[in-house]
Length: 451
Image (tube, rainbow, N blue to C red; front, side, top):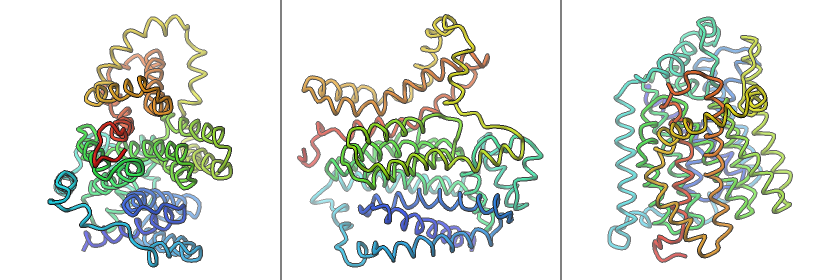
């Protein structure tokens, strides 16, 4: 019975996300499923927290199902009134299973599909039968869920301390499972992994062939760092999914000038701050949106809406933390000027070699397998004067530079900065989908002969 309730909640969440993604204008069926999972999980957990904080109701099973019912009716009604249902019921469905699984006509694509299916199956089995054992999950993320599910409130956990350091996205997902008696909350990370692969496939498929999009999806799914993250009940994998896909959708908007991509990119970036707030990487999405408006001078209203979503979605949690502990959650974007003003620039220069060695060992090391093909592709672009394609790679190199600068500043403010190499690697993992996109989206691979 608990597993049935868990799957029912997941399907309702996905249905809510489906309504929203359809209203935004996403039409590709595979891509739509992936985005539905991501958007649905973000909207429902956010709504549960708002109901708790502003309506002062306990977080219990009744609240979960009432929230799901309310959101389903709200967005389902909008979906029906706006006529978006026509794309499902009246238009020809573009997805056909036999187009993907056909060993005689497309053995390579079939092999890719089987690889994805087996990997996801093994991951799901592991997450179902292997309990949560990682320290930060036990001490914070899952601990919060256990406290909330037992008391219906954050209050008991707040009194214990170390409870308000991160937004509660993952903790509320765990809470939902525990409230219906399902104890294997790591299953959520299998759902999120599936959503990442489906959404990533949709992004690459817009420009490249089906087999090439499957190739990129397989490479992404088999990334050791991401696979390891999918087996840990940490915030790093969800954050990686939201922020990296946010970048890619905004980049797709700049390239294709389709408003729906901008809205999805802004929404995914906004939800990344609902997972992890201290990191400044949402600011790069802001810069990309501003750049896109300058280039195209269109979709200004949608751009403003996306910017407001990115900037404002995090403030209910910020206000909640300030109210409970009289604390202001520091953001790296705000701290940067103060940090620069508090230290001698010569000290930063002296620290550069040491930080560079740390950066290469603990950050660039997770990209070693991907950097050679990327550099080859970029060299080919340079020789052919493909300046726009070279500029597209900045979506990887600028955030990578931000990580280096952030590490440098951190090294002069935190004496034990070398003691957290694993954290540095996990913080950088959001760039893995970006670099794999840049590699798999290049036409030099020539899958299916599509140029």
